[in-house]
Image: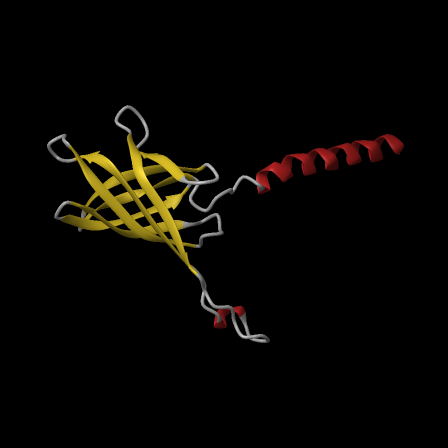
Length: 150
């Protein structure tokens, strides 16, 4: 009986030891791999963005691999929300808005690199199912994009 109790204790300790690092891997709101698409109308292109927060700034790459494009600038600004009045449901308040902007030199249809700017907002910024959606521009070309964190 005592041996079973020790096994149970060791198993519980191992599970806690494994679970603790998993809960701390979320990190900065922008950090991680994001996947989705961008384009105009029905003409959509895949978009993979890898972002990393180093404690001071955000860096990353678009479409990692042999034809990767480094992100040349990235910012996130937060418009503070307003808490619900005391004694009322939290849905009565206004949540903060996370504005994101990043840019890179991406190949155009002819193969030449052109500056592309992505601007959007983060939905569910503290949840595992966060998304960034907004607009992108390349010269006079404009469209929408949506990426979700994997």
